[in-house]
Structures are given as C-alpha cells and as structure tokens.
Amino acid sequence: MARLEDVCKKATSNIAQKDLAEHNGDYPIYGASGFIKNVDFYQQESPYIAVVKDGAGIGRVMKLPAKSSVIGTMQYIIPNDAVDISYLAYAMEHMNLSKYFTGATIPHIYFKDYQKEELPLPSLDEQRKIAAVLDKVSDLIAKRRQQLDKLDEMVKSRFVEMFGDLADPDCKYMRYKLEEICISSDDIKCGPFGTQLNKNEYQEHGIAVWEIPQINSEFKILPTHFLTSEKAKQLDAYSLIPGDIAMSRKGNVGRCALFPKGFAPGIIHSDVLRIRVDNSRVNPCFLMYQLHFSKAVTHQIEMVSSGAVMAGINVTKLKQIYIHIPAFNLQQQFSAFVEQVEKTKTTISRSLEQLETLKKALMQEHFGEKIC
Image (tube, rainbow, N blue to C red; front, side):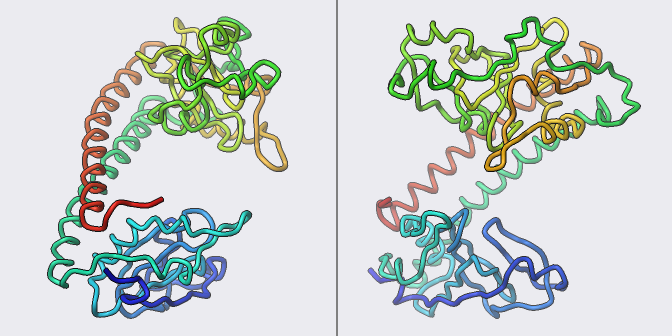
C-alpha cells in the first residue's frame, strides 16, 4: 500500500472563469462540469488529474490532457513515476474524496486532508492492465450515456418537426389556458402542506409520497417516504395516478415528468404540482413535452415564478399558463413515437446499469471496499 502523498503532488490554479472571455486559442480549460472553452494559454505541460475542490461536484476526479488548464475551483494532482496516471485516477475516484469537505456555505476540500488516503501499488505493468480494463468499461458507460442523450434529442427534434415553433405568434394551433384542458378545477393541484401532512406521519412502507427527486429522475428514483392507506385515503384529492403530469413547484421550477403506466397511485408532496388533463382532448405525453420544449410555455413559467431566495409557482398562476392544442390524432402519433423511444431507452438503461455495477465490482476488487 502507498499513500497519495507518496505517488503525487498538488498544484493550484488561480484562473477565474470570469476572466476567460478575452482568451481564445487552441488549449482547453476545464471546470467542475468539464470542458469550458479553448484559450490561448495552458498551465500543465503533461497529462494530470484534477479534483473539484470548491462548490458543486466537490471531490469529483477527472483525468485531463497535456497542454490544458483548470479554473481555480479545481486542484491539480501531478503523479510521479511510481504510478500510472489512469490507475491513480481510478483509485482516487474510488476513495470518495467528497467525505473530506468542510464549510457549510461553500464546501471545499484540501489535499492536506486526503493526502494520507491509501491505495494498492502493484507494478506499473499491473497498474496499466487494471486501468486498461476499467477504461474499456468506462468507455462503454460513456457510450451508453451518449446514446440516451441522442434519443432525448431525437424526441425533441420529432416534437419540433410535427408541431413547429409553438412560440411563433402565427402558430396555427388553438391556444388554451391550462385549466381549460382539465375536467375539474381541482385537476391542477399542489401537494398537501404541513397542517394536512406532517413529516412524523411518514412510514417506511405503504402508499408512496412522490417528491422532486423522483420528478427530476422521471420516476426512476424510488420514493423514500410512504403513508398508511388510511392517511392516503384522507389525502385522495392530492393523488397521483398514471397519466398525470407531476411538476416541480420550487427550485427547478417547471421540471415535469409523466407518472408512468403500471405505477401504483401515490400522493404528491407539497413541493409538487399535479396536472390531470381531459384525456379525450389532450394526450398527457404530448402536453408534458410541450411544457418542456415550448419556449412560449417556459417563458410564461419563468415570468410567473416568484421568490427572492428560491423561485416558485403556485396553482393559481399555473392554471393561467397558455398552451397550444393540435389535432388529437397528431398528439397520439407523437405519444406513440415517444413510447417506442422509451422502450429503446429502457434497454440501453439496463445495459448501463449492468456496466456501472461491473465497474463498481472491479473498483472494489482492485482498490478495496469503499468507505464513505
């Protein structure tokens, strides 16, 4: 075993992203989210590892190319001759460096805090063999993610191809307020507040409470809070059933997801809005994508979202949002297309999960059980 401090050294960057506007060239510069732009200078002559040391993504590890730089929220890690750079990057990824963060407002980590972390140090040849296997798995993971991104772009392109620019003042489709395409005035509903549902009423099993994390993941993340059947029955007015659209009411305002077929009904959280449309006139899949893709709609949501600290939207304002409704058969055609794409995405997602499980197993085999 060796310590990090035995196989690498740190270096710092004093580059601020706000100062890059006037710099254009051939050398990449990176931040916490990856590539920023090409500039006319670089700080590192050879390949290196970068660690996010401040703010969002803290502890994330990246292996970056020669003749490039990072901004000041990143830390350079320069390997020595005893370690293969790819092997070191995987070892550091496995260490979960984020556990060393300090600071409540802006979290940060320092090399001095994690330099004592240990890693196995076999021969360089063995390190390269291990890294090569992990590279193959990581490349496949990246390709699966790219495939999913391309399928999402395909859906967006199909939407525009079929319905055009719904923000165009000359749009040929009839315009309605959101409340006008629902059967009941209560079909657009905000989740129950504290007087109706207290956190101490949450259970470990039962009827699910659907919250913002589930919406953001398109219901791929499982719920963490549940209610008894009796409590859920009391809150039936706040139910979420297949075909309903769930919308984030706070933070990432306007983010939507369609509650999937086959899911058991649940209850929406107070930070969630439910939209239940008249299914004889409006296909909820079509509407959900309009809420995402139409600039006319997203602009309205931005305009009515209030809050000095955190943006938010209420039921009254959401009901007044204008949307466009094309012929029902066109909506159905678009929904059928999305359904086929979703089937492909499901297959790819399963492959991605298997690859991520494989990578985790290989990391544990070569670097030991992760301690969080």
